[in-house]
Image 1 (cartoon, rainbow, N blue to C red):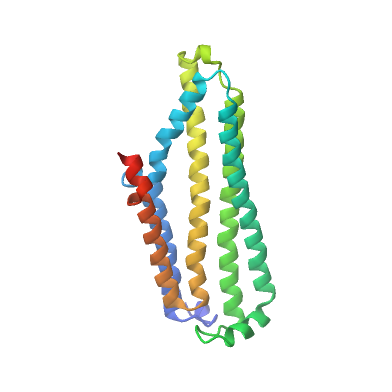
Image 2 (cartoon, rainbow, N blue to C red; image 1 turned 90 degrees about the vertical axis):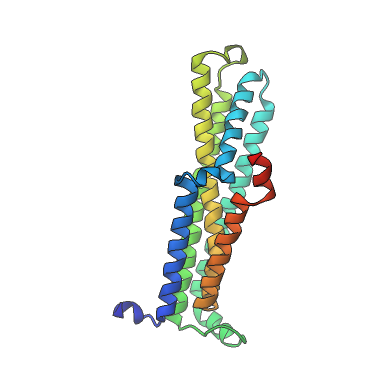
Length: 231
């Protein structure tokens, strides 16, 4: 702990970081791996993904399915590109630490960090964005696989065969995994917004983390979309 305190952070800073990591970890585990999370909006959408694959199998002409798949890929590519740009911005903040610290010192709020503190915070921020990029990148690849599977799906005349139904199950599972990876990338973006509170101070960091968790929970379990799907 003494070596960590050499960075100049207070105990409240480490409490804030621990709270951030625990909140992210518990929220992710509850949403992705628990029975409670199975009631959430993300997991409920898997039923519609399977229905989509069932309907796709019944269609002789599958241009609509190709268009939907392409729109999912394009949306994921946008977020992947955005995360790369954000990583570049974070590295710019790291490279220009001296000038930015001077600018922060002129602001009427927050605590002026040392150069080492600023660089440590910026590296943490960049790490979150890199994680988001990997999630979006993998989601893009999985949506690409789904597009291939749509193109390789059995003809509509064979839709009732056991092999065709197994194909639907596998395609829906790959599609669900793509959605899960995309959701994890978006979750990283939301927590990155909470992380920005640390640049102001540890207490805003704690409050921002709690606020982000509450907003994400409400969207999953108490939003209009959730109530519509849960009917």
